[in-house]
Every structure is written in structure tokens, then in C-alpha cells.
Length: 230
Length: 230
DNA sequence: TGATTGTCTCGTACAATGTACGATTAACTT
DNA sequence: AAGTTAATCGTACATTGTACGAGACAATCA
Image (cartoon, rainbow over all chains, first blue to last red; front, side, top):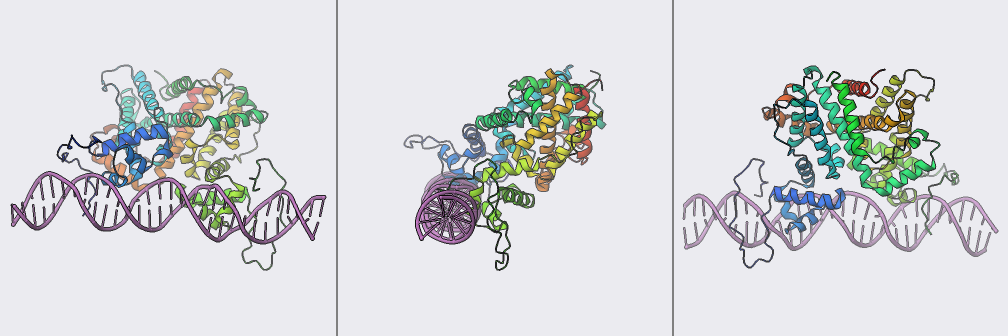
């Protein structure tokens, strides 16, 4: 019976060391970790549509169907890749920090940066459930805000507001990155019809490339609203 | 030569009225508008993956390949459907309104509502360019903020911040709607590992169903930050 | 030792899907 | 009448995810 690998953490049942002489391809054994890591490489290089099970297997030096022993299906590869990319490798959460606002800003900027390093992650978010790394980030954000003195009654609103802001900013930024072509088309349409869009034409909304600055400023405004005093 | 229909607005070259007697299927002629409208029906009913060119053609009482005379490819159907759903049918922009804040809130709530009526739209946003209806909404938002006295230097930041917030909130909400299953799994994981996520467990972040309230409150906070005085 | 079982790999095959191509038909133009 | 244009659609194909089942090899058991 070809049972799927269970979710629990088995001890790695290491096969005998690969016959390291004759084999031309010195491939490591497959594992979910290697599969996900390679999937992320592929996604970074080719985008969402570039991830094909056959190509992924090729990169791993394996047959296409071999992957299915380790992952249930392609959807699961997406899930794992997304969550993997969102792992927080920040400084250990020093509970002693007094600069809570700096901590929050750092956390959120890191969040955005992590996603922008892998632009496909923004496209994936809307369709996927929350993985453990996402939850961990939410937890860290929540605990930081809580320590900062946000009332329990306002905590969820604060968490979601900041989360929303980050997700929206990342989504927008990533989509502008995606297609210079479409963007140029949009800009042309905008310029051509500038009489229909006078305000955003005047403010050069679509031409302003200072995404990082806009993110920071907007985040400041939001935090000002969330925590009026300081 | 089978030239694609040009983008310009031709006069509808109406074919002779359908021989309204003998034909069993009293089908209207195909048009991009009918195609998009039917695509939206299908998307609402079956979700993103439910939109297949063959099924769309079936619903239209046409052959699959007939669609390609009116639209370039499936991607374009997505583009058109997304932008169509985002058309603003709000009250005529009364320039006389004094309650700019109310106007902004109304505009953004309507925006979110429009997208939540068609949850697939949130999943589509990250990958698509800005269509005319999206631009129109941005323009309306910008002009309202401008009238409200937001300085030109801050206008882009304000527009993007509010846009980000709406997109993020909609994306999140829609994804929670999508799969009760995944959500239950996430909640289980969360409960099981509650010692790892004490804060969000305590605040019942994932169980709080008052999405509308959270959206409103967060939006208020953000506006407080963007326009300190009032 | 030989048999059995469990783990893992992968070749083959199939169903689903987007769409290229070209035939076909009907209306309009000259 | 003859040609041109607009539109429809059947057929065919390439691409993809993945079901199925046969193997290869190790660990365990008899």
C-alpha cells in the first residue's frame, strides 16, 4: 500500500549512502524540504506559471511522479512555499525592548521585504490558508502591540489593520513590478485620458517610484492613528 | 483574414435580427459585454477555477472557439471581469459635499463591498494591471482627499495608504471566506499549539467574525492618522 | 537464509484544458 | 454576380496535473 508520508516528524529513515562512485548525478534524496526549496527557486526565476511539476522534478534530478510521495499535490507545494518564504528570521524577540514602535515598524518592514523578495507570494496569499509561519508573525505582532499598551479590546483591530496595510502595500507593489508592459499600457491610457483622471495625473500617482518611502510614511500615519499618544 | 475585433468602439454591426421563429435557442449575438457578464456569473458560482472557456461558451449557447473572436484569450476575460466588477455605481460625485470624511468612508466601504460580492476579484487583483474602473476609483478617492485639504505632497501617500488598507482587508476577508475547511484546519492548528501563539489565541483573532466592524474601526484609525485635525 | 513488508522511485497513460487553424456561413458592397 | 468582411465553430494538438501500478532496495521476520 502506497501510504502518503504522514505529517508527523519521523526520524529520517536514511537510505544507505548513495553509491558515491559510479552515479553521475550525485543527487541527495528527495524530501519535502528540498522540494520546497527548489520550488521557491523556480518560482523566483519563472514566476507563478513557471512552476510545473515536471520542471520541478527535473531540477531535482528526479522523475515527476516521485514528488508525489512527499507532497500531496501541486497546491500543497504552493502552500509550503508561501509559508516557507514567510518564516521570520529576525532578531530574537527581546522582551526588554522599550522602543515598541521601532519594533513594530521593523517587523512589518521585514514582512514586506520578505514578500517582495518573492513577488509571487503576494499573488498566492489570497487563496491560501494561514500557515504556521504566518501565524507566528501575527503572534509576534500581537504580543508587541500588547506590550506597547494597546488595550485588549482594540488588539484585534490593530493587528488586522497593520496586517491589511502590509498585505495591500505588498500586493500593489508586487503587481506593479510584475509587468512593465501592462504598467506602461496603464500609464499610456492614463496619460491619454488625463482629462478623466486629473487628480492622479497631477499627483503623478503611477509614476512615483518611492514605494519604500510611501510605505514608511503611510505606516507612520496608521500607527499615529492606532496609538494616538506615543 | 480573421482580424481580431479592434479595441476602438465600432458601431455594433448588427446582424439581421435572429430568425425569431424556427430557432429553438433564442440566443442573442455574442459580444464582449455578454461574455464578461456571463463570465462573472460563472466566477461567482464556481470560483476562479470554475471558469473554463468551454463552460463559458456553453452558458452562452455558443461554440468554444467563438469566444476568441471577441476576446483575445482567457487572461483578457479575467481582466475584463475584474474591472467590470469594480465599476463604481455610487451617487454622482456631488462636489458640494462638506462631509469629506463621510465621503471617503462611503467610497471605501463600497469598494470593499463590491469586491466581497465577488470574492474571486481579490485573488485576481495581484496579477492584473489597473483597468479604467480602478483608475476611476483612485481618481475619485484622490479628488475627495484633495478637496478635504490633504496637501499635494501627502496626496500619493494618503491614496496608497487607503488603497492598501482596502485591498488588504478585502483580500484577507475573502480568503477566510473561501475555505471553511482550511480555516478550520488553521484554527485547529492554532488551538493545538496555543502555547506557541498565546496572544492571538487569547484575543481570539481568528474567531472574531466582526469583519465589518474591524474594517470600519481600522479605517477610522487610519484616517485619524492621515488627517490629524478634522 | 529466504520471505515479507514498508519505503521510495518513476514510466506510462489519461483526462482536462487553452487555443491554433481553417472551413463555413451570412451579410454587405460594388 | 462576385467579392469582401464579420462571425461561428468543429477538429486537432500541446501542455499539464496526476492515477496507477510496477519495480528497487532496505529492514524485519520466519
